[in-house]
Length: 412
Image (cartoon, rainbow, N blue to C red; front, top):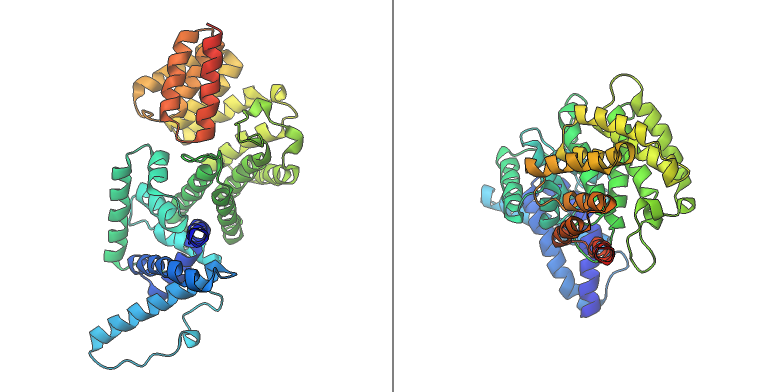
């Protein structure tokens, strides 16, 4: 029974989005589709225990969920008509896709969830939960809100879409601009959640990062002339190129200055660089183009000490103009420390701390601790490291911060 439960758990983690997307094409209703998919996973526990785990668990689950959906729709039609209902077999239904798992369905479902009838935060949260399989606690961490608040936000968004009876279709070209920013943000947050997992034992969740890359590539194919789409794909490629060097074999986190640059994916970095050049041409660059340019400067530097921090700081100043986010301001402080010194950067971090918008954000005390350590203020650094450890949900990050705390105490 344990291997079956593990197989179902793995299928939930890797196949949920594809199964849900295929089922929504049948139901045209998010709530009903989610219920049918959940029932399929429950049925898998019993069926796989009796008959063994199928070779293609995703296909099995998609078929089961689709049958659940067709049964539900038939029952609904019968209730409405009060007459016997003759239904063609599922294989003969012209509305059903020939392949039960069509990757384009995922992008369609992203655009459906990113409907302008919803606030952009709700669009992104709903996409991450339903399409990308990110848990509610993980989404709450990404938005710096409580789990209860995020759960309520997702529930309200689903109800609003259901009440509006929004059909499942790809928006027309004229509708795309109203949804693009939320789609880009959702894909970026999905990648961020995979690049550094908010919770759990491992530093990364490559399944989520690669899912985000797939969606970004689909979006690039759909909208090849959009500069921000190029920027997003470049940003993801430049960061994902370092995936093999971000932790040791035993899971210890390696900061950027300790990573083996010879093991970075040079093909991905070259592709990212070319995309950045295209994203920066043709007028003032947007948020994702600027973030991609910063990531590309890190990725193309031959060594950490050769990084062009002056140019990175200029790009952060431009990014703050386009996207005045406190997280951007915090990341900018790292560049400030490299260009103007840790004391100047610490003053900016402490202003952000007083501002309060980053309360509970684990990287604020972590960066503050590092700056204090570099200034020789070991007692204050130790207190900041303890605060960061308390906020860290990722075991690899927590272990790294604990090691830094131990080192700081040793040098008092």
